[in-house]
Length: 306
Image (cartoon, rainbow, N blue to C red; front, side, top):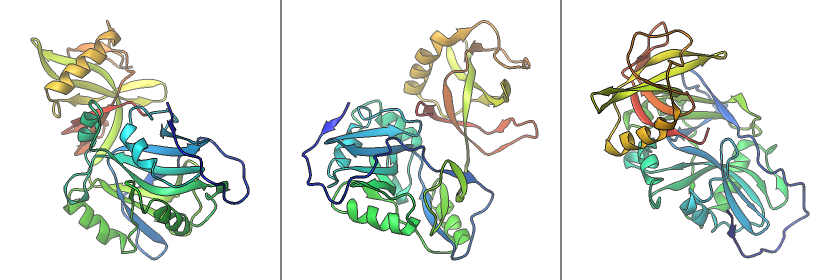
């Protein structure tokens, strides 16, 4: 699906349009760096997207390159206000909360309806009007991006030039997801790199669903696993984070995947209804045991963009 837009006058000479670009990924580290080499941004709790404007049309792609323009109609409509003939913008789709926080579970709920609350937070500009911006310094790319979206409903992800540990303490205090730190003069990274790093206030992981538990006919949680090589190992049982709507959706989605045996490489001593581990769950937790079992896990939603 594409949104048609009015044709703009071309500016400058045309260069090769790269199409979908594998997004830069931040490496998880244990602490936020300090020093003038780094700038810091809020880590958002949403869906990573790439917005493309080309041939008088606009598309919204997920991190894996899936076209979710129809699901993100409001984002597409907001980005439609951008005055560019061709552009590729990197950002995150979120549902804003209090104190600048974002909520992945609220985003999942919004996508079940008409998605009136979702917004695009843009943090990088990769291509504009025939020019590839990826080799420009980060702060220069962000300056062009801020100017480009200034008169639109697309939000800009500000950078903070303060000490990283200080920002991290503040971010966690007000309930933010965490901090992404970037080398201020870096080019746009290819894949995961150490020029972009992230530290979360709470631990999160995307894990395959291996089965579910029932207490009679009442929902009693999910069993999740973690891939080690080509084997699925037990990562714990998730008992919290479910409401009536999510339980209904999970049961509908898991029913066609039911299998007779456990999908784990090593059988566990739990009773459950086992499924093919094709659905991914976003899980928040306090910590992990030495064996990798989650402590105090909480279900945040299904991940369909990965």
